[in-house]
Image 1: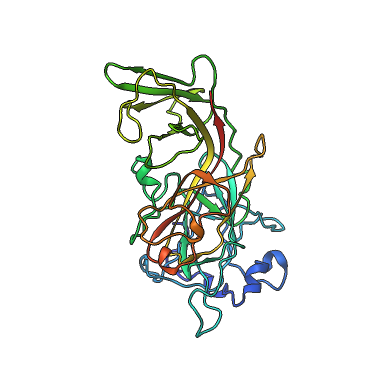
Image 2: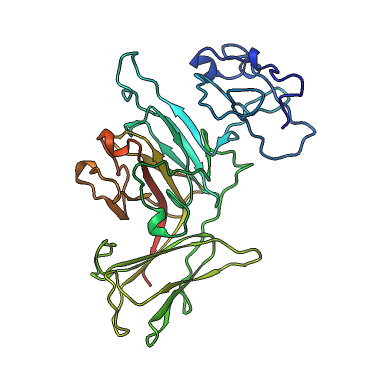
Length: 376
């Protein structure tokens, strides 16, 4: 802890109160001159470079997790000499927001959240999530992004699923209010799924019923393998179709390309053995910048979110696709939407207009990716 200084727990914060939205939007008077607020300044000169964390607490003597409502606040990172704001330095792993009702006797859910957030994945991909036309109404809620979904068990089918009656969100990725500063948060590198005489291939021993898919990619990413029994190019749940997934995360000292295997027992999606002589239709999907947004206790999302790839610039036009699995949610999605979408829908999609659909449930609101489809 570098502040508050021992013996001076209040510091200058009492002189830094922001009384209006306009003051917060304008920023510190030390930068804008007037019309903003008199900011408390923390200067890390002489301290190690790195991330510095701001912690809010309802008590001073020891940290308290009691809810603390702050109507207006602003955190600005700036240069020291002739101070100038540096956008894209402030992030949170878990933003807490509140959209107060429009009138004192109005509906708790009569105000939309209309902000825009920027998510920075661990592989260096930046996307923005635009709530302005989403019809997102959750009163008080948290926003966090991660790499797996509503859990991190390693079981793709479990992690991807929405959860009824439980807060099953967890924070992993940095979430910004501006495009992250590229000097501190550089671009990732687009990889390639290797297609040659050695990759991808299906190996196995028919007598033992043991098979494995071997593949490789030049950068970290996610690989999904679809065995398409009916040849329609999509995964159909509850049929003979099969869908496998694996994350390529380089091991310490491992060099590119990164080879991986996915085991298969030789059974189709209905549990029936597939004859070794069967000609299989197999699609590989290689994705980067993959992230999940599980939301808890969000009562309305009446239109759906909009997502854009910000950087690095995609080597070819990519349209983001959303994936979700709401089969464990008792209520029904609006507009005849399926309860599970594993082939990818084009946003805006995955929306609901019934209060009980999101109330006290964790809905994996979206899993978004910018994929490459390979059919060797």
